[in-house]
Each structure stands twice: as C-alpha cells, then as structure tokens.
Image (cartoon, rainbow, N blue to C red; front, top):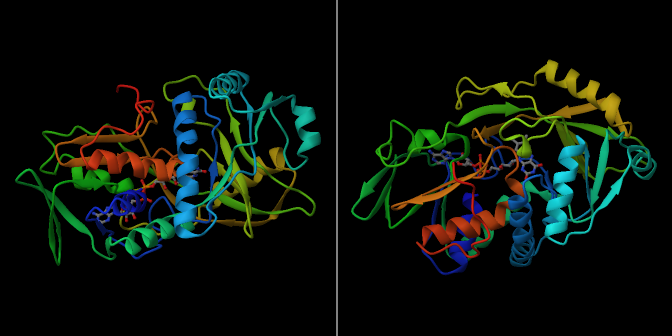
Length: 360
Ligand SMILES: Cc1cc2nc3c(=O)[nH]c(=O)nc-3n(C[C@H](O)[C@H](O)[C@H](O)COP(=O)(O)OP(=O)(O)OC[C@H]3O[C@@H](n4cnc5c(N)ncnc54)[C@H](O)[C@@H]3O)c2cc1C
C-alpha cells in the first residue's frame, strides 16, 4: 500500500520518500507471493464499489509499468445461501453481470471444484499479481522521482511543527505529512508507546499468520478464483469466509483456510511450515477440490492483520495518514488505496465520496 501511495504521489510530481525496513521484494509482511484473488463480488457492497473503482487504476498502473497485473479470469462464490444472496444484491446494484447456478450444474461447468449449497459466478473477478504489483508501483514511483530506501527501519515518527519527523538510524526526514502503511507493524509506530497515542486511537489490531498452500492441478482441470462461504452471521462475518483460492500460473491451485496461527514476536518468525495446517488443507481439498493433486503440496506463511470488524483503517489525523488495508482482503484494492491515501496525505477531499467506511 506504501508502494501504491508513492506511485500516486510521485505521478503528481510530489516529493516522496519511501522508507522500508526490509529488502525490496521481501517475504516478511503480507504482500509477497505471486497472486491474490481479485473480485467485485462482496457481501458488503461498499467493497464492490471500491473494487469497481480500482479496475481503471489497475489498468493505469499496468500502462505506466508496461506489465499485466490484473487478469479478469472469473471468480466463484459458493456456500452459505444468505451470503450468496447478499452478493447478488450488491452486484445487481452495481450493474455487474453474474450467473446463479445450483451446485450440480456448477460442478458440471467447473469439474475441478465441488460446490456447497448456493453458487454465483462473477466473470469480472480473477487474479492480481502481487510481487509484480509492488515492484511495478515502486519502479514507476522511482522513475517519477520518488526516493526509495530499503533496509531502513523507521524507529519513530515524531510531531515536528505542523508536520512530522520520520526518524531512522541514519537519517531523519521532515515532511508535511506521513502515510503509515506499516501493515502488521502499525502499532509499533502509532500505538500506545508512540507520541500519537493521545491523538490517535487505533482499533484493536490482531496479527496472526496464515499458511496458504499450493497443490498441483490434475491434467485438464482449471480453477477460476473461488471463495467458499460458511454459515456465519456474527459481527464482521460479511468480510470473512471459510476458504478461498485461485489458480496461480506455474504454482498450481492455491488454497487458504481461515485458520490463524499465533505470532509471538513479529520480528523473530521462523516461517517453519505447520504440518497440522497442511493436513487440514489436504483434507479440505480432498472434499472440495477434486481438480487438485494433493500428493504435491507446497506452502508459505504470510502475516495477517485484522481489525475487530474486518474493515480497513484509512484515516488522517493532523499530519498522519493511517493506512491499513488489512484483514486478508486488501490486495485487490491496491491502486485505489494508493489513490485514497495520496489524497488524504495532500489534505484533499477524497476523490469520490462514494467510498466511506462505516463508522466504528
Ligand atoms: C495469506 C494471505 C492471503 C491473502 N489473500 C488475499 C487475496 O486473495 N486477495 C486480496 O485482495 N487480499 C489478500 N490478502 C490481503 C493482502 O495481501 C493485504 O491486505 C495486503 O498485502 C496488505 O498490504 P500492506 O501494505 O498493508 O502490508 P505489508 O505488505 O505487510 O506492508 C507493510 C510494510 O511496512 C514495512 N514496515 C513496517 N514497519 C516498518 C518500519 N518501522 N519501518 C520501515 N518499514 C516498516 C514492512 O516491512 C512491510 O514491507 C491476503 C493476505 C494474506 C496474509
């Protein structure tokens, strides 16, 4: 999200510095890996509107970087019928095409999956290329004059006149505004120990790890991106689901289960693969993904940051813009989040008032 913010600001000719604690292209946060699900199909229609807004910006970033980043190869939602009904309402309101099918008809059309209860196909969904997106946004920003610093942890952000001082071991930058898009590390910069604690009240942020897997794909099989909704009406349920995945070129079919592994120390993660998580994924795939070859499995770990209501944090207080498009579904919005945070950083009104987060 920091890379996308830099892309938007540098394009406007603003003076931009990007400060990243790890190496370029690192795998220690939330944005690494080849692909993420892209979808306009959401139970909560404000995210359908946001995804719609992101599509032309994906095309703009692709054009700027001369690379393909968003492929609208189609996406399936299935499972809890009430959730599928809510998605249908949102897509209809935004004039998006969709097909409703029964589970058997859906299996005949996509034999790589077994379907639960109710099914909706959205041809506008698909996948985005994650590593490539971050790198492209940084490259275009740099070409437009942004100053990029890697292996440079920000130690603190201090008030400085009307603006801020961003302090690292080797340098202090003074700026009129700062966008804090620190992902799982947000609290270490703006939490109770920071000079901003009296002014900024962050919601409770929970950091866990997810361990998505990739299975080989059986010959002749093909997977659209898919979301499997479980019966859940508890607070925040509209932004959660039981399982998701997609076909990732060269990697196989991805499967993520909404199981969370604890993180004791953000900076001392061993990234060792949890065999219980692998076994659960194999068990799921054997029931729901007949097109997956579960004898060939690979896995990574990824930081997952959640707020209590699963909504993003996008806000400005004085010179500080807080940007945490987290909760496991932020990547598809990357360029539009960059646009929103850039507008907030410049002190302007948001580009389109259609995007308003619900009041906490
Ligand atoms: C397993 C998994 C699957 C997901 N699947 C999808 C999906 O299919 N579709 C979708 O839309 N979204 C998905 N998401 C969500 C999406 O990937 C995240 O919302 C998004 O990557 C968050 O980006 P970010 O920039 O907020 O965080 P990050 O990518 O973690 O970036 C934060 C950066 O800040 C840096 N930083 C932190 N503190 C400091 C400091 N003090 N000094 C300097 N630098 C600092 C970090 O090193 C890091 O590079 C998934 C997430 C996970 C974990």
